[in-house]
Image (tube, rainbow, N blue to C red; front, side, top):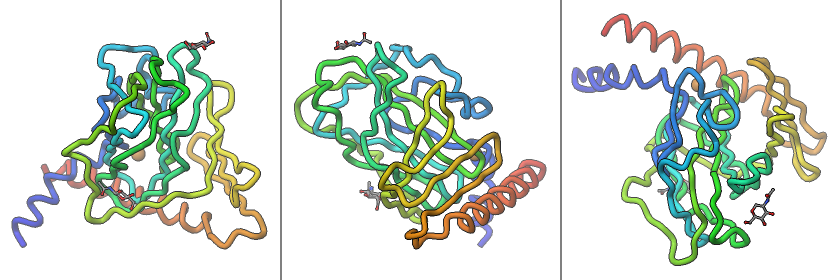
Length: 225
Ligand SMILES: *[C@@H]1O[C@H](CO)[C@@H](O)[C@H](O)[C@H]1NC(C)=O
Ligand SMILES: *[C@@H]1O[C@H](CO)[C@@H](O)[C@H](O)[C@H]1NC(C)=O
Ligand SMILES: [Cu+2]
């Protein structure tokens, strides 16, 4: 019991981070500026650490501190960083902790090209960004020993579409999407198509409330420390 509370306290400072990109290596991480498009305030063209991204697949590993996030894994050519292409459909994660997709496919048409991948979290507190410098390559899929899911984490693909570049900062439903989401500076509005069977509104509100509770607990924890 005592051990359990001690380890919970150790985790508390972690709640100040929105999300961490564990692999591939991030271009940069700033908790305070993670909401700055396109790369959380870091230079989208940075090539300090470039990861080979096999078309056959690369693990992408993140750690979320939110009770729920929707992830968008996107790529752009280095010479054209406003044209983001989805590598996978949106992924909705529930539960705080590690999430790793062991094999995100690369773009075959871009083999040999210098590119950037952008990890976007649509979080209860808004959009958050980190990027990684990559080069798409042939060969077999990459693996990572640290690719794991947290015990409380579940994830599944969703229909949510993201329309987000320097000119447009919102999500919107595509033609087949069953819901649209618009998030602007903290406020959240969502509408559902008549055929939708989900209840995104209540889900978002509940999670926002949980995030607030987490923040309060986090501050208390920091005071205790
Ligand atoms: C970027 O590079 C690719 C491949 O090298 C080329 O096909 C494309 O025309 C370039 N795009 C721009 C905007 O320069
Ligand atoms: C994590 O969970 C997702 C969704 O269930 C799954 O696709 C993925 O393979 C899991 N990752 C690992 C490392 O098991
Ligand atoms: Cu956050």
